[in-house]
Length: 145
Image (cartoon, rainbow, N blue to C red; front, side, top):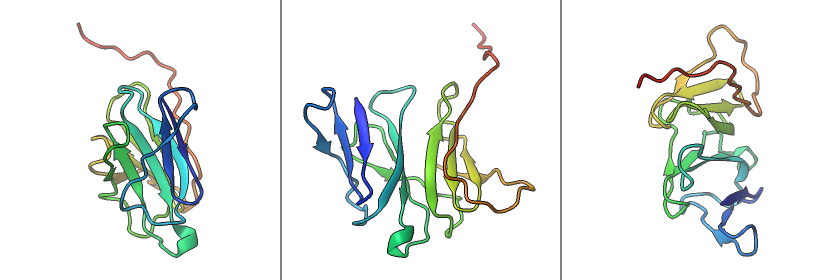
């Protein structure tokens, strides 16, 4: 499964290595929205997250989206993110299911519940545009058996 986002507001998915593509753009996506990135789910192949930037259509609100069914339906997941935080990137932690990071034009945000709620990771950092995030894991995760 491969995902692609365009700079004019379309999200496409292919299940056959690019031989055919299906438009799975959320119904509420505004035309000329720039899809900054799509993060394929690490724990479920039908899950994906999209960061949709609407700065060039004068919409300063954040637009982060989640699908859990291969793009058939999408949910906008912005609760807790400042209303003037333009979306740049979204990433899922590769080891902890439901742990997401969002980059905006002013700071980084974190969600511990798969995007249902967000909180600031800014702490004492200055306001700065964060364009992308790379999640690195170095320590092994201990799981009780």
